[in-house]
Structure formats: C-alpha cells, structure tokens
Length: 213
Image (tube, rainbow, N blue to C red):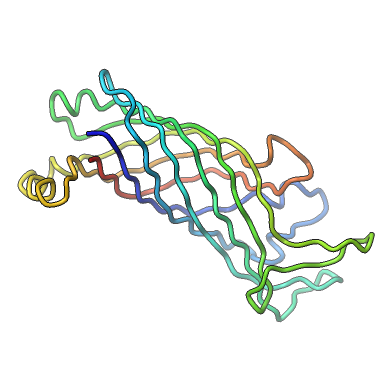
C-alpha cells in the first residue's frame, strides 16, 4: 500500500450572499440552486504504523446556471453561469490499524489543508462575463480565492463484502483495497477574511469511492 485515490461528489452552495448587507446576487441569479462538485483526490502515504498519514492533492469542478441580472435589478432573459474549480493540498490521517490488523471494515479518518478555488461567471454566449464599475473601470468576472478546509469521514471496506472479487480486482488492477466513503468537510474560502474577495465558503457532505494501491 502506498497511495489512495478518492473519487467523490457533493452538493455545494457558496455563501456569496453572506458578504453583502443589502444585496443577494447569488439568490437573484441562481435562486436556491446548488452546484454539484465532482472530482478526485490522490495522496501518497508517507507514514504507516498506528494508522496511515497521507499527503495529497485534489481537484473538483462544479457549475450552476441561472438568469442574468439587469442594471435595475430585474431578471434578464439571458442565461448566466457560475463555475468553480477548487484545488486542495491536504494531510489525511486514517486510523486503519484495526482494519489492517483485524480486518475490521470501518476506517475513520481526518483531513485538513489549503484550498485555492478558481471561479468564473459566463454570459448567455458562454463567454467569461465582463462589465464596467461605477468608476468606468472594466471588470472581468473571473478570479481565484484562497482558504482552508478541515473535516473527516468514514470508509467502508468493500473487500469485506466480497473477498473473492477483491482478490481478482487486486490481481488484475493492483488495487489492494476498495472503499465506499462519506465525508463531512468545512471549507473557509475567502482569502482568510478579506472583504475584497469572493466568499466561496460552505460545508460539504461528500460521497464516493476510494482505491488503495
């Protein structure tokens, strides 16, 4: 065992409107719609003794479509879209000693690190939107926001359910263990409290598959 690959999906509702006192740009354009983040995370196991410590990187992508907003605040017939692509650098500790030693099927884990989220807004033609502010300066609707994440989850060892299939899968693909998992993660993505940055924080509940090889 030396690496773990995670493939996961989660709903995501960035708290953009929370940074405004008298405006709700996200709700105006997208209503209550959430993004669906899909992605993968790969880590290398640097320590294996009483548990496993991994260092890894991940990338997710999600988008949501809605209606453009006119200068007077009313809805437009033009379509708009918000796209977010968070990249993560994480430390993950998995308490897999009981699983390795006694074959228990449940593995709890904790994860934390840094997140950098690229974001961009598209117009009705699918191009990156742009506009002019009150000072006449041009603005392009794209950027990046830095932050952190922390949380944990539980892995369910699938080898325990079908050991025969697990042996064949390992022989054919080199995957030692396969897991289903559920993960709860707090994301604070706002350039560490900057009032000038896009507020992309949220709490994520993810589900997916893990492959250890």
